[in-house]
Length: 304
Image (cartoon, rainbow, N blue to C red; front, side):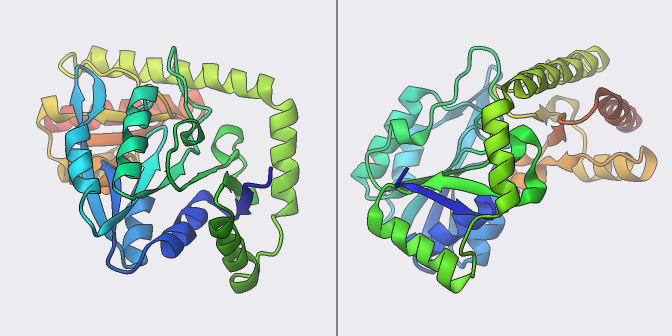
């Protein structure tokens, strides 16, 4: 418990740790495509993004560990910002992958910040492994119940910083500089209630989300067999590879918004590796999801 820290959001905690653990101009290693808030917080803090692209093979996302090591070995790259499970691809990191990353970061003196906010949303046989189980060097792990229990309005997050000096520096900035001398009481109450009594609700939510993912896969593949799209290993975010259809991303956005009145995040929001993809949030009632998928199919057909 002494390693526990709090903050108003995971991204605030990530941003503050980036500021404290690196200097302006340093590189922050990120697996790409990456959550758009990662790009924003890194560049807004005058750090540089050091991308390590994930590759898709047989419906599975892979990290080239040799490329990761060469990126970590660059002296200017002082941090690895890990997203686990990964947003937007939905990849669940295997234990051996995490162990390799931990060893490489230790070897090259790179600190690790792990964003694990999607930890409760893994599907099938896939299991989330927290960074704390594999860490070898300095690290921080941040998460929240806001995704799992739909309580982001309470603006609460928590995490763990095991190194005492680093933890004290973080809390000093939080409390003294930013005036956040205590966690949000509604956030505390909501998290306690969720973790004590919310398991049946979360189980039901997970079943509902997995059924939504299957609906997306069945409906899209029926309309466009060339896609052969499979649900992700984790998250309620469908990262849909539309490259087999050879559709222009910007034309698709125009068709979706102007003609179908449907807003779906374009893949290029998550970096150049996202070109040709869409990120569809299935964390909604089925009726709303059906409307979105029907609009997507209509937009794609209009451009085919």
